[in-house]
Image (cartoon, rainbow, N blue to C red; front, side):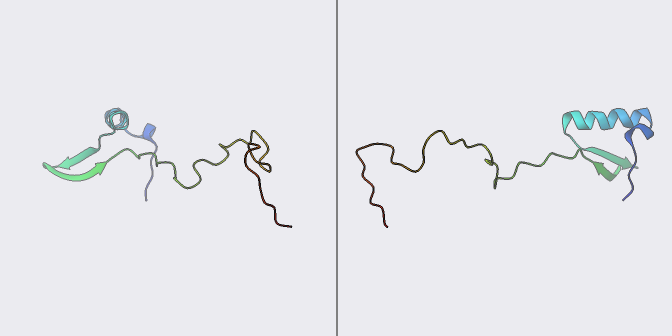
Length: 77
């Protein structure tokens, strides 16, 4: 695939591509009223669902003992 810097393109194309980036709408290039290419901005990918809560939890108390005296725990020895 060929890659070119936006600054290497003529000002007219730079303005059209900048507009496509800002609006999110694709830019269609036509020759003799026939579309030959579509240039669309790259959309940012969504955050993955798996692992999205990593490092967001916080331990604020003792997780070994019961939370109240009402509940008794049977411990296997």
